[in-house]
Length: 219
Image 1 (spheres, helix red, strand yellow):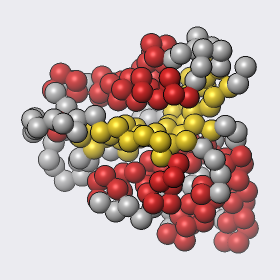
Image 2 (cartoon, rainbow, N blue to C red; image 1 turned 90 degrees about the vertical axis):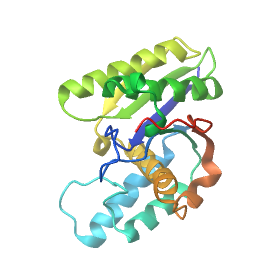
Image 3 (cartoon, one colour; image 1 turned 60 degrees about the vertical axis):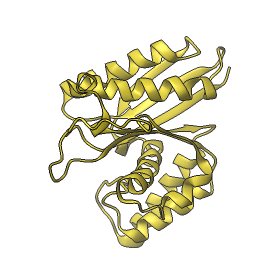
Image 4 (cartoon, rainbow, N blue to C red; image 1 turned 90 degrees about the horizontal axis):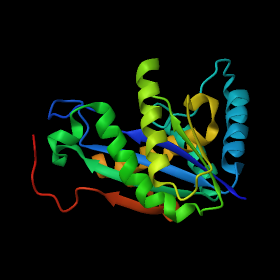
């Protein structure tokens, strides 16, 4: 039976206000990989850059902090490989207060909306499903977030053969692929800058704007 591997990353924060630094959107992005070739290629690139620049420290690719020159090379790798990108976009000000009463509740809602749409499109009943998210926050918070993801997958997965994990991004290059795709989507939605998004647009299978038809702003 095929094993479908899904890697996830999020952009935005849990600041539900108009304060400086509060994101407009919370965006959950996943990549579904038919193989791990894109991750292997990213590791090769990391070794090449380490040799060229004499880097002696352990540092994963991270789109927010990487130089533009590094981003260009990472996107070249991404463009050369096959994988599927899906994104669920939540405009935070349109979220009813009861859905964001806690960070965990809002986070779980995002995952439920996302996987309810994506899982039936990538997994069949006899497949295996492996879902890996980037770990967030302190140990207690990471455990709560992972439990939320696991419960969502249990509810919406077409297959009963599934596993979930929460790993640090530096330990898994496919999480770094998800980070780059999520960053490109965030730049498009938050800043109207679609230059990086255009490089992966052919891989984006869905962008679900949850509150697109909503008109009520709660803050």
